[in-house]
Length: 346
Ligand SMILES: [Fe+2]
Image 1 (tube, rainbow, N blue to C red):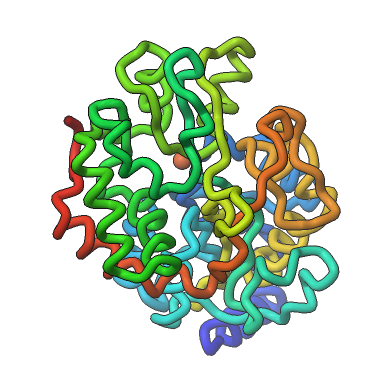
Image 2: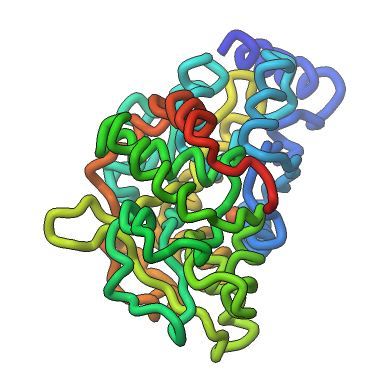
């Protein structure tokens, strides 16, 4: 906040003495983004066209960007941190690397479960982690909860993302939240006992299923959506996990933003959050923020795009609050190590 005031004073000085060359007037927004840039380009271009605010993106994994924010502290050039993982944003909040905004900027737009009541973070799209399978070889009725993959029925038939990847850590965090550490550990040990093929790419997991190398995998829905865009007859099907009456709903993660504590261009960051929280900013494929990557809106007024709507109705896991996503990550990493879950390609 101190830096913001300092920036504003500098801006006034420049305006008075040199001319209108201030950070705000340049209308720039610097984003540290963990999102696939290719996927989001259209949405960002539309934002720039509509607002005149130029977006500069620096990319990295959620963990690497968090590490950069820590190292740079108040000198970070980032105004906005865009993560693909709520747990990482929660850590950023805990470590004061992001700052609170007035939540009135999204009230009436975002589902109230999708932003921090203190205004530190705002979720702008959802991605679901669920089953994909070969419909020729798999009876989809046997794919129920994530725990069902521990059934010996799936021995030598699974393709899974390695344990070092944030997608795996987050999914296992959700199991710990719901089942407790012991039961979650038994489930994941059951997966490991089934001798999965570990593949460090959701796309390649799906391609391996299509090629007959595995029968079942766990991936984010947008990877299959991308392949279906190229080939509507792609021979892999999707099933939503944990949809039974007593179950918890399909685990999801979010694309989530927070304004950094070091931010200079705070007004532009707020404009970004307002824009991509709105029904319009969350609608459309490929221009909307969720639609640009076949994800689900967090604004209830926006409908999912046609392609992902074809995956059918899904009940998301809303019993695991986003605010809790950071709490189980270390336990999940320890569990992964204890059960010998694969850390690399196999
Ligand atoms: Fe991804």
